Image (cartoon, rainbow, N blue to C red; front, side, top):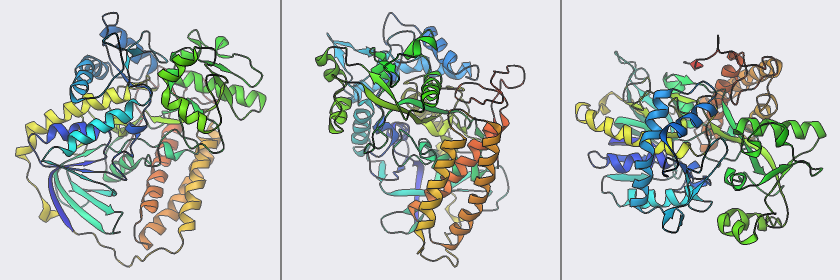
Length: 527
């Protein structure tokens, strides 16, 4: 089945939806959602949106905090662009109806790790869900926006893939309809990747199940430049509980005074960094990892129980209620926590217009690498980046959409060949589990060249198995996700082996120091 649209958006989080709303003013926009309308990284974001919203704050302060967290790899022009456009984007969300918390009529701003002042606008502790709700409602009200759920993009369609001459240009995408099992063909003038991150590449992650690196994998297979994939941010505090699945304890809890304790009840961050629990995430995550390995423990404790009970419940209602379901009362006892893969600082390389190295292909949000985050993302800069670049991309597409012609006739239909339905899904689940375990054990918070080499050898063998399986059987969502996490795992391993220094979230025992002479630059991979 063929579909034609002016703009195809792959992904329905804050970046994809806010772009779609604006692009609908001048184009037909189709948004593909891998699962439901609220199954996105955005909907799981607890903390908030960092922006200069107080007279006590300044652009330069936010810029410096971002540069410092990024550990020498941020692009200053990108940082300035995002920071200076941030307040307008937050105010726009307020106009659209996002209920940010207020105190005496003024925005109530939180403080998180790495920030020198309070600048995080939040809606209690489920900001992302409130933003997602407003954006979905607004997008659904637009006549020119079509939201399609349970659609998973398989691969981008490009002129190179269709064996056409000229600069590699995106033409659309092959898409699996997960409800029918059919593969649909979408032809578009412009394609925007908004697929989020790749946390599910790791065994322990704060990310939802949809975060399998689909956009990065597709862009890489299509020939786009991929940047800085060695920098995976591990959130220091994910709930440790046998029945809990990827539940994040927001950094805002530490921002309000929570302290980290080992199982002996000893506070350890005081000896690690001047900012203690509010040090950048990579430092806190490594400190927790060290403490766990030092004592052979499975977790550490996060304690805010010494604060006023009503304050805790009112400030963190979602976290409080969720923890109670697991028998933990955060107003009376410490919370068992462990680091988990949280944010992909690298991604599909884009310029200041959000454009990738493939013509008419844009990327927004976590799937992209804009230069804002460098080697480590500053807390709550992610939703900000997505909002700012969604607006920038909408303006760029507006200026060129009428000059682009649909090339549906150049697109070949999807061919199944001799592929059949799979009767061995155990192979998919086994390979999925093996990849996530090897990434956690060999390519985690602390790395060594020996472990990385071992991971590379194993991922090469797994890739062969997966490629054979992919071509022999009809596509399913599980198979496509396995294919994508294997590709992303390969990119992370290769990038980590290339960077022979320790910087930001990439720490290797074999090169424990930062090397500004040889390595103060991006790591670029291209197929």
